[in-house]
Image (cartoon, rainbow, N blue to C red):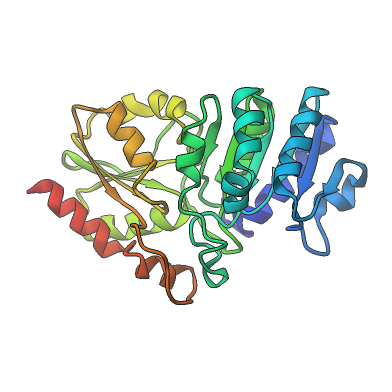
Length: 302
């Protein structure tokens, strides 16, 4: 499937299609929909724009879920995981409410918006909440599949997206507990990509190192990763590439799950971006580059 829209737009389109067959689905937005939102146009009585009130949006969604509805809430990743953190902890974590929190602007995809709108800590927050499923899809097809899986499930879910870039993923989506191999292993090392930009970096790395395996993951909560472990069994060394800080990263979770393997992390580091730039420029300033991936691979092989 050739991508034609961003993951953010794919979410809206897929949710609108699903809502046609599932009257339980309601869509809550925190002023991110713009002047026209396809869900609002088609199902105005099931669409709520709650403005800049992220914690309240999560609380309202938890209440709707308790009435048997299937709420999807969308807001910036940083506001979902941090500003609304207590509501997410109590509603999705403690109560286990089947709310789907869909968060664009993950990582530094907001770029020019600056550190207030960047989010390199959200996976750490969500990983610490037992029972919350976490998806970081890459591209339109994988985003649509993740939204379908979230709608079908009866569990709380966090879906992290980018902003408006179209990522043309020419590979099969990685389902929950599954790995999509973008490059077969020719040795004992593989890179593991999480999200769109890291997947592109890993693809560039394998072009330069053809024997390097490339495993792509979408679902990255501990339970989903545990289900995927047998598919990574042939790799003695994993280099996990993700748009996140090292603390609470997917790499740290895999390291705990695989104590007998070497797990290296290529991440966004510990600095705060000090200058403006587009998404790629901001990532490069943080050290998340193809060169960094290849350096980690070579370091692991010494």
